[in-house]
Length: 223
Length: 95
Image (cartoon, each protein chain N blue to C red):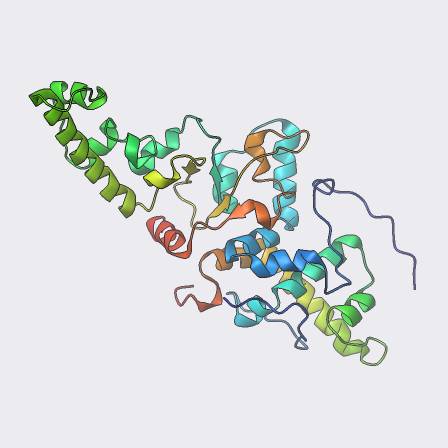
């Protein structure tokens, strides 16, 4: 047998988990067997020469991953907790969580819910007293706003209250596919936390499934 | 989508459809092994023997054909096929 040429290391090799393709007992296959289709899709994409080349171009230039890159490859990212999400407003008209949307002007406008200056003040003011017209009005406004927001959140399959403690989703408006990185931590050396989710080094265990129903809604919404 | 078999036998020729097929879903691990072997620069005969279960010494042409077409399809999965997985796989009638 001819000696094999020396393998040239390419970008991502340092972090790319290896598996023994010669064996059918490698633990890597356990991950694949347990993975959702999203994870399998990522395992394919991360081996794409063009994807790796695109990622390398951006990473080596010091630029951050931009919308064009995400949309081209069908990537969806979670942001870091606490990050300001301008994109979330486009989708939900809010800052994300359903339970903090009572004060969101975006969703209120979208659903035709007009707030008066007084009620806006009330909504944003913590309800300290359990009685009095101001507290009742504030509570009523909050319930109504929460209900509308919840309905909207359901409709847009996005960000219900129970995910409040998790990193928020960030959707790309025109992409038709969705890969969601479960987390950007810990960041490998030389990469920013934001970029890790797009790195070919991230294995399928880092990729969350946003759920078949959710994904289908997302896809339908972006057709 | 069912759990993909870990070490399935392969057809002589991989699919060339423009959409994801059930065969593709069943051979996703085969594709990943071939991509890994390709990246490593492994000899095609070794890959055919181990991954495709075809002895290149006995069936050279069949082994070469199966190797070439499956590697091509594996690369298609990395460029296009993964998008079909995200849309629900081969069972999605709207693909």
